[in-house]
Image (tube, helix red, strand yellow):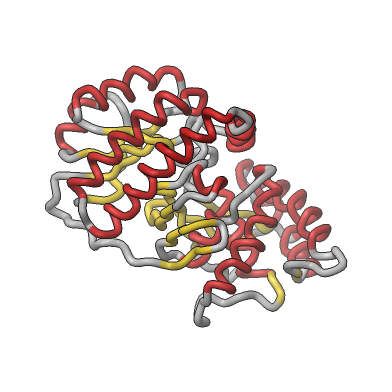
Length: 314
């Protein structure tokens, strides 16, 4: 099969807030990727068989959404079904349930290979086209999560940073070039457990019924998130660290159910020492936790025994 490679993504800022119209910033993360492959059914490995079976279930959903009266997106279902029968699977190194967009990359690959009248990455992407793509991807990915913003597949499909100003205002953006000799860093901390998006989003929606929580989201969480995004894009990393600390504190106070219990003390330790600051990576509940530090060597020492992955140096 001649299928493109699609990369994982990291939502640097905006988890949960983007559901309620605050800013978000997503960047491609090229350490992991996935692509559609095909080989004889009899030679599929167990994990490839699982992927093939999952695609067979997914095609039923895609058939359903492309047969509505005025479909948002249509697929070459016949070719897709044929390829699945002939042993197609998604060959991916992206860890599932880790908040780095495993289903997003799969959705991008299916759209790229089988969508009819697809919006190509080579054309001039106006705001209208970006919103249409986001809407299509949200519909396609909702099969996996129950509710999707469409951002993960959009980021995977375009493979460039995306700035979310509000639900209806998104744009591609540039980010400062990483400083290879920089002491500061953005990193991933492996929680060692898988997180499930749907239950976490459910907890959040339940919390949103509380007026105090809604106020906190607007006056603190969204405010610090927006400030962090502005700091990051402007390359003002000193101020970024200050605002990430505030964001980390708010997350620990108000998003505790989304942070695995065994990391509560470690989270607080970072705030107390200033060695690092942790925040949610995606919906939380497990998977990766995002870390920001003014001194990566110091953070590594403080987090000894935990698996860290470097994302960006500044």
